Length: 288
Image (cartoon, rainbow, N blue to C red; front, side):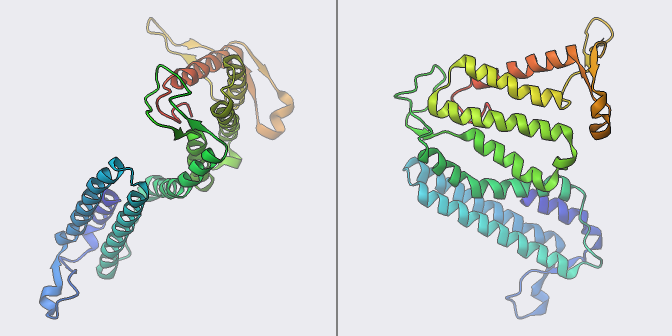
């Protein structure tokens, strides 16, 4: 947040005066004004407050005082937002022209902001959901070579990861207009449901593998394939030689082809990556 506010001010520095009103508490107008560079002191103060709260939270977490730590997190978030609003208000008051909003505001800041708010609001409900349906990882009952836990913790991390992608995506991505995004979300939804059942019932590996292949099929057929395979010894290998065309779909989705080798290779590669990540069992949600 501080980084983006600094970049935003730097982008508008050309339309700002040398002096800005920072210290409203002084009665003498001369002392109310400060050099434009002083505006960045607000960012320094914000970072100092954040550092103090982080150090404090580390102690609270070590003492298992999680509720108080959450209150601290909310307090520093509110304080940082307040300071940034104060800073931007000063800039808006003295600017000679309308402030320039850089393109990255919509490309970077907006998705990050929506994701942050979504995370902050959803993670407590996902934790409650995990406890409600007994989606708990207990190191005493769930033996695994990669197990790093020392006490029971809620699982269902994949559900949270999925929601953190889906909800911001509804605001910033043309999901309804993209065949690839629809296929990706269908495949991801199947895997989230599979992951929840696996967290609860420890599904047999063969059943899990079959469902994974089924979900990958949606993603690959939606268009996530390799049309060329890199070849370190010569030209790239063309995977478009053999295909089947669905002419009846042309009026609805345009020319749609399935390339046999491209689809097969993509399915194998995606399935390998999914199960490779699944082996990192010490971190919930990595598979997602």
